[in-house]
Amino acid sequence: MISQDPTDFFSYFTMIIRFILPILAIIVVFRSIKSLLIEENDFEEWGYLSLPNGAQISLNHWENIIGRSKSSDVYMEYPTLSRSHAAVIRDMKGLWRLYDLGSASGVILNGKKIIDRALIKNGDIITLGGIELVFVTIGRLEQAVQAQERIRPGKIVKPFTTLIYLTLFQITLGLQLCISLENTLPSSAVQLAVPLCFTALIALTWFCYILTRILRRVAFEVETIAFLLCSIGLGITASSVPADLYKQIILLFAGIALYFLIGWFLRDLDRAVKLRWPIAVAGLFLLATNLLLSSTTFGARNWLTISGISFQPSEFVKIAFVFAGAATLDRLFAKRNLILFIAFSGICLMALAKMGDFGTAFVFFIAYLTISFIRSGDLATVFLSIAGAGFAGFMAITLKPYVAERFATWGHAWAYSSTSGFQQTRAMAAAASGGLFGVGAGNGWFKHIFAADTDMVFGVMCEELGLIVALTAVCALLVLAFHVIRSSSKARSSYYVIGASAAVAILIFQMILNVLGSVDILPFTGVTFPFVSKGGTSLVACWGLLAFVKAVDMRKNASFVVKTQKHVSKKEIRLFKQTGQEEPPDHNEDFEFDDDYEFNDDFEADTEFYDAENDDTE
Image 1: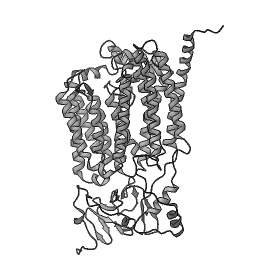
Image 2 (image 1 turned 60 degrees about the horizontal axis):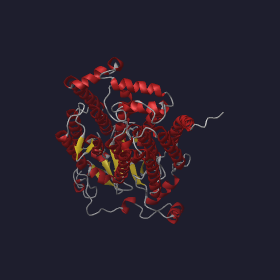
Image 3 (image 1 turned 135 degrees about the vertical axis):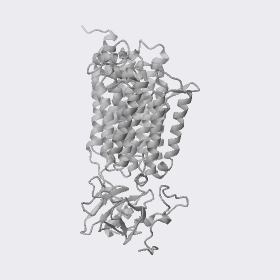
Image 4 (image 1 turned 30 degrees about the vertical axis):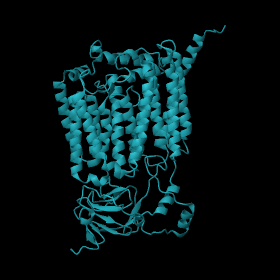
């Protein structure tokens, strides 16, 4: 005889959901992997260098290093070339410049040696180490033909279909929470918060998708991964502190707004580079305010309360840190900029150490190593920085008792299960009790432990949603990292490469510290799991960092951060294909200087550069 008890029905329904959630999460991440990492991602071409034998070497970036180093963008195996001999760089206005990178034999333009840099145009002859190269730009119509032939993402893996699976995941998770928490929530108002906030989450997800389509962008994988993680995070908030659901949704909206704002800001690299130091100064001001006005809580002074609103300034400083570190290649030639960035990094790390926030300080240090290596390519600088950090860490353990206590607990959490290892041992026990599929969202006990939904959130994920969903969340962030690595070789500008690499390094190492710290593989540092941990400033900052990750995606019409070519009519393209010519013949003639155009302040004014037509020197 079949039981008519509704409790039995809900029990069976919850059990089914426990198996459905991991499947949906895996499908969403797998489809994102297939789209971001497996689908073809072709190069853009902006010009080429013609060799004496008639061969052509494409210029696939706005900044191209020429040399005999295999890491050069334009690699030529001639013994007369320096490893990094010269650079050919395009700016936002389409103007190209030639740089001498301190080569042994110098750089010659149209028969005359240049100093520092000089403007180059279509057909100019560049001589490097006795090798003559003809510089040729890609014209407006040729770019349009190339754009037609480039592969558009989303033809194999439809983002719309992936979004359907994500929506099913969100609906299923919300239903399970409504069933699990029906009798435990304190009031009907709080009970109503769960369906309302998950409905708002779904609406925000589709709003962002529709907005990107309105902007004529076809890729949505990066946002899909972020929304998957935010869905898990909202489920954990509903389970642990349901009264904070409305606040979490509002902060999610703020994070998405910041994501689109920074994305719009990065569309103009001149603007982004020009304002990077004012943004860095604003970051230092936040840290100084934190040091002066905050009070110590659990050994750290990383929270600031203004008018009853508490936030962590260091989370927003991460965005300023990436802005300060990411610079276009021409600015990397000026050592002053790298020295300023090192000084800025040192001030940030010292301020975080003074606050006692060593977990965040370590995340900043990893971002610093990422930026400094990409900018300089100097392993000696990296190893010297690591040695300095090791010494600073030793001093922190010696001078800060609670830091020493955490390191003493590392690897011996069960020996301190009632004292310093209390949280980690409970996290491991909860993860074990959850098994592969979890006990069901809202049904766990670990959520009642202090900081379970922030610093120890991996334990809550494992217990309530299961190990499969928890590892899928880890995998989702790793997908973003591999996407940045894959896209970096095809990015237009080094600014996007450095910014995306630093941003994803912050996200990945936060995740590593959170996960491995929770299970006692690494020392417990008290950092959040990106997008998942409850907390407003962390969530907003993660969405801000995501804009840098989105910017490195150079697939055809993939990223709203990247400007596309101005509209070209089909008639113009058809005539160009027939004749092979376009007017004006020199692509650079399409561009004119604005009255307020400013040259790079790291070098002398262009009027002092070498002018091949007016120079009478030998």
